[in-house]
Length: 187
Image (cartoon, rainbow, N blue to C red; front, side, top):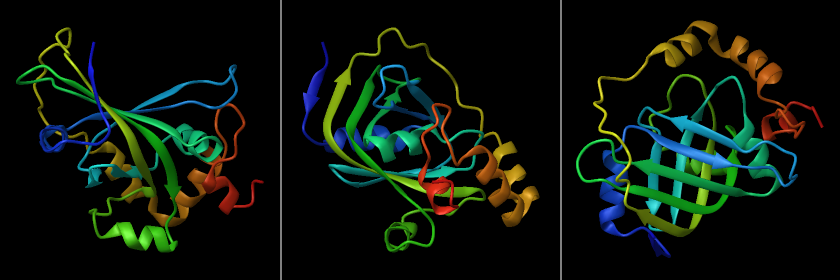
């Protein structure tokens, strides 16, 4: 069984900062709704304090996490050691979506390199940290970032990205309107 902490310890922070990949889990309130698990890469996550994290969320084909956070705020982050000592680290908490053009965005933007396609930030207040063994996780070797997402965002440009988000990111697969959808009048 894993160990549970009320906040990130310095060793947890050091581990997170070494990771090139993390996962974000969320779910709607409805029992019939779909649980979402998203992999995240690039240098997109920041530890703001032992109980606060945020990540820069880039434009993708869906926006489930955003919809779930709007509905209930529940979020889980998972970090996995693919090299070195085995460890799985999960952060549980309540998250919010921060959109460009807001005071909260301006407050957090300085923590990030604003990558092409940035559509929102996800901020989370962490209430539990769980560390478990990870003995069953294989060793994997990092060979680089995929540049396709960034290149596609640059190629589309701001106007086409806005249209894409309106089409693909305004409503979740379960019909929940996202904060981007609210902003664009899909309410």
